[in-house]
Amino acid sequence: MATQSEVQELLRFLSRDAKVPLNVAMAKVKELQQNSLSSIGQLAKSNLKDIKDIFTDEKLAKQVLNAAKRVSKKRSSGTSATPKARHRKTSDDGLSTPAAIEASLSLPISTESDDILSKMVLQTNRAPLLLAFAFTLLKYTMPSQPLSSRLSLAKAVMSMNSRTKAINLGIERGNSA
Image (tube, rainbow, N blue to C red; front, top):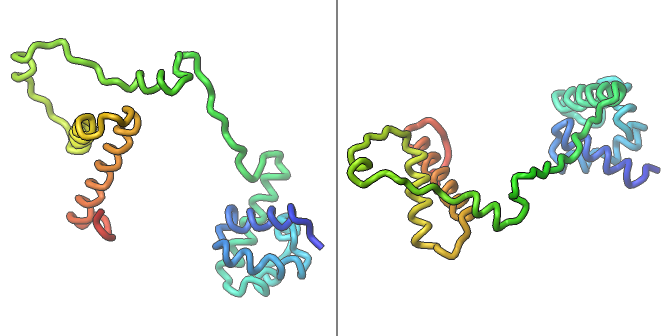
């Protein structure tokens, strides 16, 4: 009988490394255990016929076998098969509090006169201009929102707009936003 951690490891391997849909992986775990293929090492040492008996789709069986060999090779060489969680590095730039982070997002104010600014010609792409417009609009329509939230909302507007534009031009398929 396999322990709970072995079952979890096998499910994690099948769904993450072998890219088997989770519902299929959950259905096949018991069959794998009954055929003495309850670990990644055992899967890597088995032959395609044994795995094909469980996963009837030949492509899926090859996928599981290749992933098992790849993962067991990684483990034998000393590297972990599953990536470890990365921790954020804290920097000493004074941005440790949310208030300091919000203050760092504030936009600079121009020191040029209106006459000079009115004579400037600026060429830009549509997306950054839309981002700046949506961000400025949110400044007046949602003044209680912090800068980071307004920036995130403006990015969402920009993303939806570019997706709709791509669909209308025929570059991308799907429903428009």
